[in-house]
Image (cartoon, rainbow over all chains, first blue to last red; front, side):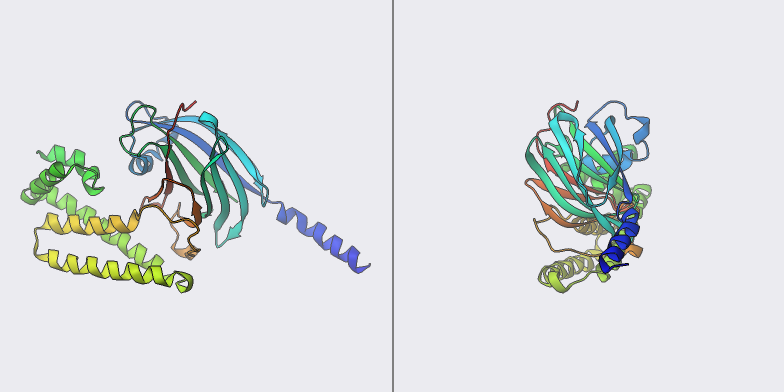
Length: 146
Length: 164
């Protein structure tokens, strides 16, 4: 076998490992000052309340996807927004991921985070957080599991 | 101000989200009411516990690239501890409130500056939802963290528009 052939073979054998997927769940939540909270958010509600300052939370959209490493994925959010993810790898039981929160083409957040495997991270969009008026706030729940 | 009022307002009191007059009313009630004082003390103990976790995380930090910022934080922490020592002679509710305020400053340190150097935390110290932000860019952003599970929220102050 030539060196090139051996290299190709090795790359082929490693391919399934490199392409192993990251299970990503993105939940769009509308937060408001009053009203019912969806049962699906019962366990998350105390944290949402403390972090976002609102009292009522409704699931607007849920999407779950297998994302390949180093491959960008875009999740559509309500109100013309989107969440772009680029899973970059695992390190010490943490998922390294680049996250961009966009409003149309306007980049609201661009961050690199290392999120504990099977952990949850939140993004909030709204006016001044607690006590926001009118339309409430949009909260994006991001869960990632290798 | 009744015990029921204090119970209802305790979260906001701990989070320093009450208007100053109401904050004082709650504190005044707690200073004269043993059960409420006990509740405030429990929250203070929780704050100490979280403080220990923060200290453990700090021990795992790679300080090389961030030393100047860490040195400034150490100076601020030292000043806070001096205040805590002075407050030991104050009523229990006062000590509890000071400890909680100091902890809150550590937990909710405000917006992360863009392109902050990576801060590595050993996995063994990570809480279930803990997230470490290696880089953060954007305008009108604050980072909030919930101490128990370590859930992190990046908040953008931006008109929400229609949720649907």
